Length: 438
Image (cartoon, rainbow, N blue to C red; front, top):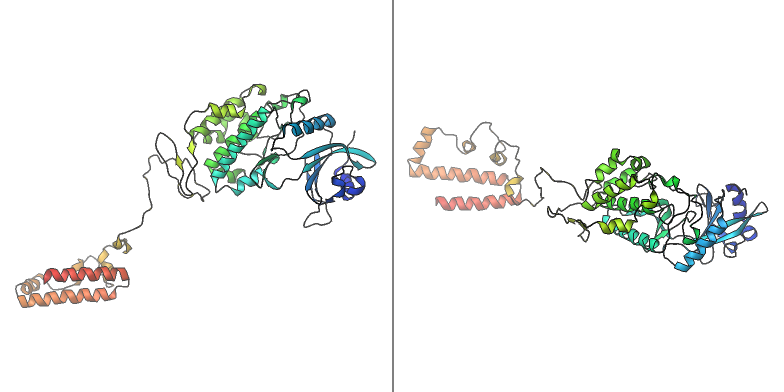
């Protein structure tokens, strides 16, 4: 059966009451673009188009196909029934209608799906790139989700950033169920091969839907979340890419990959998962891949302690704790190595003399604006020759004159000082000196 073109669906969606055969959607109203109120708000995928429909109580997504994916009736009836039975929070409320919309006199299938009130996977990372603990917590939630999916014999089939949403309450929600596996579909053909950068090189050889089809992409996502939380600077390189840390070329030849090499320099846990991923890339049969929860539970090494204060992270390692400062910097690296480097700690300066210009040849030059090069600073106080000095010191009267000359000179210098702190300090020094000579 030939499916309608995208613009042919537009006509029917503009007239929901006449051409929608779903009782919920036919009383709704199609949403229009904000900047182009005459154009329908829609999202185009490779094989489908999605419209946003507003009803009195709820917003919905209306999914219409432009290409036949096979026996949609069997797939979506079974998916609908199974998800209603297991009642997991990771799937949106949806219903499959085999005869859901009338286009050019023919009836075609639709999906009515709850419109997610949340943000995309990559938007979540972008919003929290300066708060890595939230990304690390999200990795834990992701691990919990895939474990529950495995326990219920479910695989998504195209697990990647575009199909993962985060609700406003922080819960994970999966969308796009075209490749979803449930036990009743074990004999159905695997039509969806997934996005490059998430899939094993042998995924194309998978003939039937499999409960193990997500195992490889789960490790890609979990490892990427851990690495980004440890080194957020990775994000600026991949934010606009349709992938996470790995490209399809990285996964085909991990031994030549730059990102594989870099990840082996991060925490012990990331190193372990990177090595496991490297081994899985070489596996010829993806049915032999282990689930993510098995890989994570098999790791018994040191882990990063994520219960930290806002400006400090402590890493549990044999070498001790490494404090990392300034989480707001996009370049900070939680595992920055300090080998062959001296530790530097910023402390308050309590030395008042440090206010002086240390580039000066002599700190006393700050006390007298008339600097004389290559001259002893005490020469500023008296310019008599040695003979005159000797005559002065042999006479008590002259000694008093000498003392008075010193105090007058110091008083003059102190009066020229502009720094209030130095004035106070110098005044105290002057009193002490006077007491010594009295």
